[in-house]
Amino acid sequence: MKQESKLSQKQEPLAETQTQAEATQNQAQTAREFATSEELLRADAAQTPVPPEIEQRLKKSSAQIQPPPARPWWKNLLGR
Amino acid sequence: MNESVAGQNVETPPPAAAGWAVPEFAGIYEEHSRPIYYLTLRFLADPQKAEDATHDVFLKAFRRLDQFRGEASVRTWLYRIAINHCQNLCSSWHHRHVQTMADDALWAGAAAGTDSPLRVLETKELGQRIQQALDALSDEYRLLLLLVADEELSYEEIGALMDQSCDAVRGKLHRARKAFAVQFAKTA
Image 1 (cartoon, rainbow over the protein chains, first blue to last red):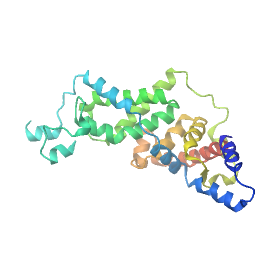
Image 2 (spheres, rainbow over the protein chains, first blue to last red):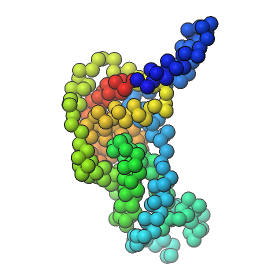
Image 3 (cartoon, one colour):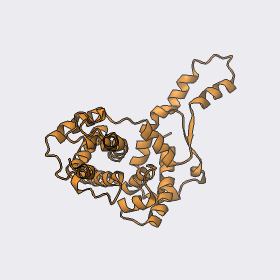
Image 4 (cartoon, chains in turn brown, green):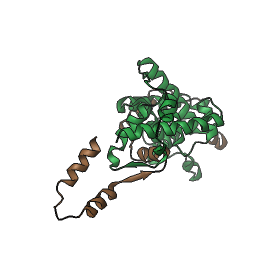
């Protein structure tokens, strides 16, 4: 529904002299096709940013927790 | 986290690790926060709840870091925590959707044209349309599509996460794709 109204808005300012072919070309420039649902979801995921607040909250939360007792293997290896 | 080892500069954490109680966890968060957030966002259909859930998932992982044995990938391990967390939230919120139609009926009655490419004109509206389409699916189909969309996961790993065989995953994926395509077309 929203897309239809957007297209209508885009088409309104077009001068009468502008050919239908030009209008179609303008629409084609914003159109995008996805072969599969996975491709679509990947594109969506790629344009979905992670809110930076999560990292800030995590840093605070993890600071209040006793660090995990196990040492990383490489620290054991280095004897630190 | 391996950079500090390779660079033999173990005492100085990388800049991304600044502020973390355990600097090694910074790398885990940086690498996996996007897919985990995306899964929670699309599964819970609520940005605020997704934010809280992502925080809780990584905090649980942080607490259990010593229990991670490397038998599965970190990504799979985090997904398992995230899926359990989301499913618990959904059951506690009375968030279960009443399916007016079974998923199978959705795709079985669909026109043959649903195999055609999914077309969008404005990518900024993509998220809304995807959410609407996913919301119309069962939790199982929604989760399956979200996991398959992550290229780092194999069918074996997805099967393990969903407690199903590889063949079952492939079979259901076919139906889930069709059901999604039908619902996505309705959002146009």
